[in-house]
Amino acid sequence: MMDWEKLTSDVVTAATAAFGSLISEKSDEHFYAFALYTDEDAGTIMPSANSIEQYEAILRDRGGQYPAVYKWSTAEWAYEAWNAKLFAGIYRDLENHRKTLPESEEAYASYKNSVHECMIAALKRMDENGFFAKGRENITLFISSSDDDEAFDMENQSAKRLNPEQVYKPFLVRYGEDDADES
Image 1 (cartoon, helix red, strand yellow):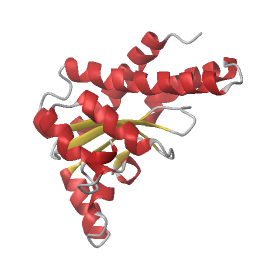
Image 2 (tube, helix red, strand yellow):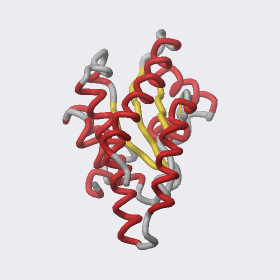
Image 3 (cartoon, one colour):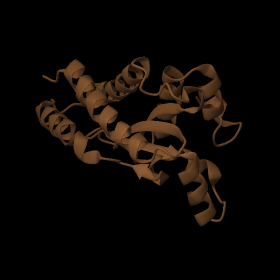
Image 4 (cartoon, one colour):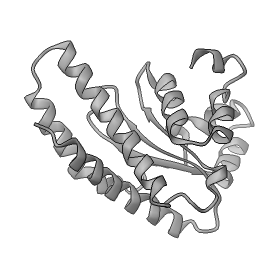
């Protein structure tokens, strides 16, 4: 049986260390987004972050095309999987737990939902503890998936839960005004 509270605490510890080292090492950059992402099977949890400086550099390198994708897709961020080794124990815990799941759609859906909730709870706890306090009004927190058809809705719903209204409302329309209707 998975201890989800312990896993959440482990994610908080790993994410705090990963993002903390990033902020320290890149102290001259202005971070606008921090995310935790997983894969389609919810078999791992990884950190990702980006700064205005890195976003602008990527956009210049790509000829200015697809600005929203480069700004909001965690896979396009300069600091995707930053210090991922800190999450190795979390990966092992998730892998071991998945091996114990009954082979049913209900068990898998429940497991996947629990992983997503753990990711949201970890970011929320970090925020409540003041980790993102510096510049918080300009920082978007959310969870995502690297290859999941549910990623867009996952991002929107988590952003609503994790951010003040002045932060999440612009995020909901990051790919165009029609996006807000889909969330």
